[in-house]
Image (cartoon, rainbow, N blue to C red; front, side, top):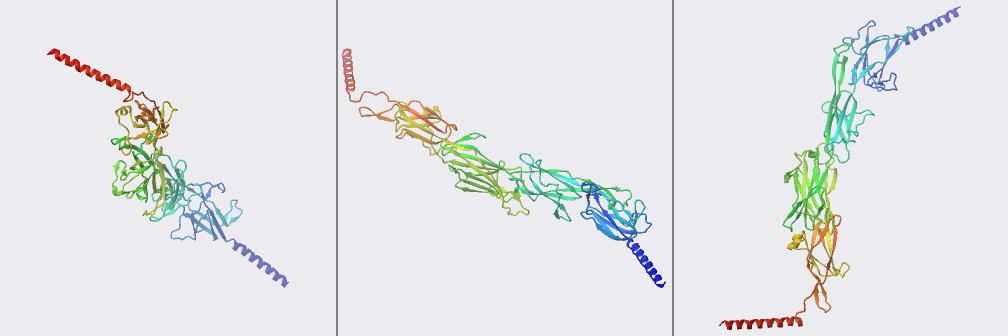
Length: 574
């Protein structure tokens, strides 16, 4: 009996201890809050919104009968947690009681934070059949995001520039800037329309900075494109205390889109004129697109014009180099430099002359803008005599990046080159033949060239570079060639006929031509030729022959008869 009582007592104690343990285990609970962003959809969530990190929640203990959602005066939060990338916070080890949950801070893009709310631990289930110690809350925040569009176009063509890459930075305290991570679906490279659009931006001050540009453009990594995404406070929301800014509904003000232009430096190189110093300083201008032809010794005038990028004052290098083909020689001290049409102060540039051209370096770029053009004029002498074409090549070399704190260390450059129109020169070959085109070739015939029929008749002949008349003397093969002639119409005048041996062994001359032969040298016929035919003329009786003697005797008889008649007339008159 005594044993039975002891066993019964032990059973009762075990049951009491178990009951106590069960009750004690159920006296703590938790509150799990998962925060959703209604401004962005993510189909992988339920509900289908992105989870929102960076939201701060505070938990306060309040009286069990408290109905106010205001923060108790002087109270400190029991716990303060911030949602992570999963948008979640979990308040644990919460004894039974009533708690106030406050969303105390949220990302700048949140327009309307949720109202403070009360939670009981435990809470009665929806069907009223049980108590729930682990409370789950899924509040949502309305969010808005700013966006900004920057457009870049070519200054000269006005066409959009694709493939300009930027980095996005956000302003911190003071003047500090840090790189801002953009979502994977946001590109910071301009498209075919020259636009780059940044989206998903909360309140803040931002800037875009160039980090890469297409070939030929200057990377300007000092100029930035700053904009601000701002929020405007509204009225207090229903059920919220208006004394704190966290309970203010807010709307977003998007910045206006903007644009800018970039200049891709270019250079042109044209022939402007040709001078003939041996023809009274003759000069003729060359129109754009005109075929340029010159003679050996002519002076050719050129003009190289380059555009000025907007960053020129920050560029270490800006030069114009001129390289002449073999056959063209630089003319000393012929280089002049202009800003637009105004001659540049010679202290702002240097000119280096060498055997095959010039190098012009702009040393002082102060005051130059992207509305200016740098013009370099220069001359060259055509020294080539062989028929052909000869060019000048102008190369613009410039710094291809602007470096912060420019001090001349930005030494990487871009070079763009352009050739002038070709300077063409031709030749004329004359063949001297006897009697017909297939006749014997005649040496020692002499010809001169005139520029017109009138000059040919007047004996005004074309001169060479030294000022001497051009003389073509046929060689043993009956040919003579004049090289280094400009394109045009020439009049070939025979000034000395060739000779031949007559049957009696005497040397006689072929008949000298009385009219000029017209020859045209052109791009279609740069090496012109002409065959000139000579024929033998008639001859007078030889001096000292019988014919001449008869004429002399008859002459003397006429003289004697005349004298006698004169004497007879005089005597009769007396």
